[in-house]
Length: 431
Image (cartoon, rainbow, N blue to C red; front, side):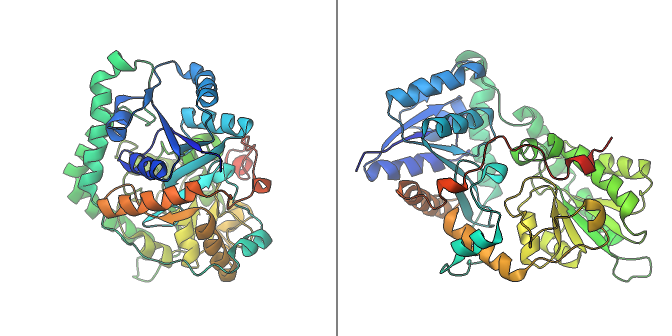
């Protein structure tokens, strides 16, 4: 069997990719790595790596030369949204190199995604019920629940270990590199500090917003729709949503709600649990709702139990959040406004957002069961990026999946990287 050479690009802010590489080498594969900043080197150390210090425009030519010199057969990267990774995925497809996208799992918690080519609109996972049922045949039900303990402190320390060297030494060692994050790390940390100081106030405000959205003045249950917000800088928003601007989408949803929803319906936005507070969602959404005449029916909660809110809701509006999968599993109607792997006829609404407010369709539970089994068998493994047990289990499982000779999703399922327009773009942003 021909020796395979795996080229690693950027991974999570943890030792995860290094642990996967150790296992690949132990199995006889060759491993190369390109780092882009000192933060990458922190978590790859003590393994040898190359440091790309050129301009972003020079990256494709640099990479093409590198894969030729080292006879690279496989490339491994965290997501395919970062500019370096998007260019690498495109080049890999052109040259016939196997692309492995590793990310947090579509299934939650304690799953990881290992997917060929890309995610969301770039995913090979089929969107036809017949193909999904065929992939699910003989696959056992998906195990629910978490396996590993998580620690926000560990996550925070890893994040600091990644960003501090970049902030201090970027001008000297990799002056052309720009962080993939939406804002400078120092600004992001300031948002977290402020959010922490106001934790009690946020909790109280969230409780009031949830009560106002879910209960009528007489104390009975109110009809409400839930919009779980994602992170505005998430590449699932930037690359896989209409317009790539989460606030513009939120405002367009409020406008549709104002024009088409029943007068007794409410709309509740829930802030992402790890939002740093810089987006100022309560104020921005509140202003938009007032301007559109529904200030008394649109609410924002920075807190609360997501699953409990889903179960009580009339339906869930999302861009492409994995919360959509949770909602489908709980039997609630879902509409996905961007590219989502689960946006499939029979699972999510395929009609206009304007219609969703009045008659949100329930998902087919049998198709959802097949979808989950097919997804778990083709793109998911157990593990995590944080915590010793999650790291070790995840590294074992990801390495084993990477070393498989036969691809679990065939090339015939490949989608073009130019995803074209989005189904709801014209409705959301009609001029």
